[in-house]
Image 1: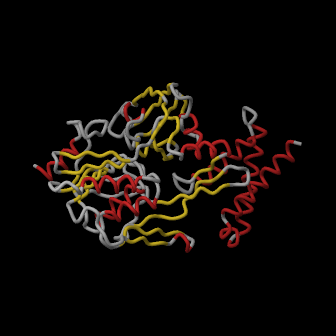
Image 2: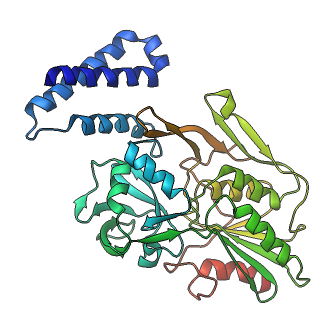
Image 3: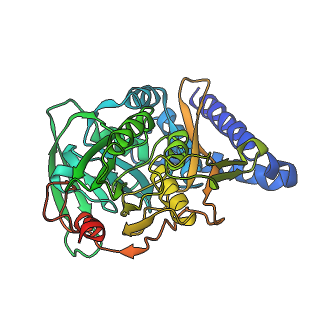
Length: 383
């Protein structure tokens, strides 16, 4: 009975492989069948010889996820439970630590801690590697599996162990989970001369909020320029990145996407009408600026519209689609890459600032004296 079940699972997996690699199958049928036979042998050996009895369904989930994770850090399998949770998360309010993460070299890498969340307040930084969760090694776990471990009831605590470049010893953070509410835009008028706008994420209403803020600032006759703060912005909707870039441009290309399928090959251009009427613009970026944030920063830099200040951005220049599956789960699959107006890809390279200023302190705030990047930008306007 067990062998029949195992053969059925292997056959299902084989069909998955054939569908995923249709072109390779057409080119080299024999080689593909050899790999399927090898997979069957490995799985059967594990079932018969491993020290403990395995859950075959979980083993197959891991195998499917392994295929996707081998493509890039952002592609992954979501079982029905995780897919349902992820849909709740995209509503803008969810329980957790407040970090965007990816998988790198078998461990979890922090893309960015979201502002005013438990993780950012504790001192977790972009580029940190999470190696343990509550003392449990992350190595060998899937990305979604590790993310699941970090989730829990609001008010409960979690201990994460991180490795950080430049530090010899691991750091341990004990963090209390909270409801994460993402407020995408905050702003302030500095010395009645500089419009400071901090964009924390590219949510559905970000451009509408930003449009109103700019309109209010433009009523001030003493305004000399703007600071757009994209530090620790993990990205979000491509449509919002395009609209927000367009606010500061009169014409020219903003971004293009290129993929294997023609429908993924698109170019996006600015329409006439610079909403800040040509005033000087400084954009702040750091290692936690990713995806849509990099599109905006890169477009404004390439079009000579803004000065970029801070640190090189994260380098997430790819587009993922969520594709539902018959089992009510889904796969997150990279379908195209972003390219800046210059033709450069953001992927794994990031956007390099015009003025390199390293970050100090653990939080970003308009009221803090330790925010040397922001103070540097303000001084460029008012001295």
